[in-house]
Length: 337
Image (tube, rainbow, N blue to C red):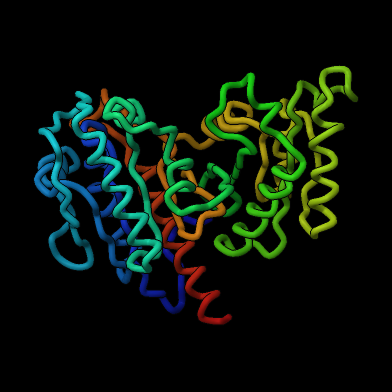
C-alpha cells in the first residue's frame, strides 16, 4: 500500500475523519495530517467530525487548521463539556461515540466513501456508562456485521500486514474462541478484502499456530492439530492461499515474509508487538469485513503529548492515504463491474 498519490483518472471520493478523544492528540493530528493529505489528494473531499471551536483551538499545536476552503468541511458536533488537553472527562464519552455514529451512518448511507478514526479513550466511554470494548467491535455491532477482522499494516511497496483471529480477549479465553468455522470465515474475509480493497489478485496469507513451536506435534497443545490445520485445509479447498500453521517465534523473518501479503496471528499480542516494532508511528489499523471502509492510526490518545505540538502525525497521514486508496479502488471495481 503505497502512501503516494497515484491515479491516472482520480476518483471523486469523500473521506470522513472522526477526531476522537477531545483530551487526546486526535484533533491536532487531524489538522496536521489534512494539510499533507490535501497536497497528496487534491481531488478528494474531506469531512472532519468534531467540535469546531475545539478543532480550531487545538490545531494551533499543529501550526493551524488547514482550511476553511475546499475541499475540507467541518461537521460540527458540540462537546458535552469543556475539553482540556491531557485531562479526561467522562462527560465527553458520549460525544466521542456520537462522532463515530455519525461517520458510520454517513458511510452506510453513501455520503462517505471511507472513514478514518482518530484514537479514542475506551475508559472515558465506559465511565460515561456505555459498555465499550473498542472501535473494531463497535463498528461490527453498528453495521450488523457478524464477523470482522482487525488488521494492522505498515506502509510502502511491500508492507507487513498482520491480521488477528481474535482481538480484545483475555489470554485464557483465546483457545476456546478458536474454531474451524471461525478461522475459515476469517480467512475468507482477509482474502476477499485484500483483493477488493488492496488490489491483490491472489493474496498469500501465512498463518501462525497458537502454542509455542506450533504445538510441537501435540506435545505443547493440540489446537494446531484439532482446529488450525483443518481450517487451513478447508480454506485451501476454497482457493485461499493460506499455508501454516507456523511457529510464531520464527515466522516473522524476511525469508518467510518476502512472498506473503498478510500474516494471520491467533491473538492480539502474538502478532501486534512485531508489527508495531517494525512500523509504529507509520502503520495503520484497518477493519476488514465491514460493508464500509474504515482505517485508523496504530496508536492511542497520547494524553501526555496532547496540546504540545510534539505528536507525530505519520500514522494519521498513512491512515488517510490508505482510506483514499481503498475507496478509489472500490469505486474503480464498481465502475467496471
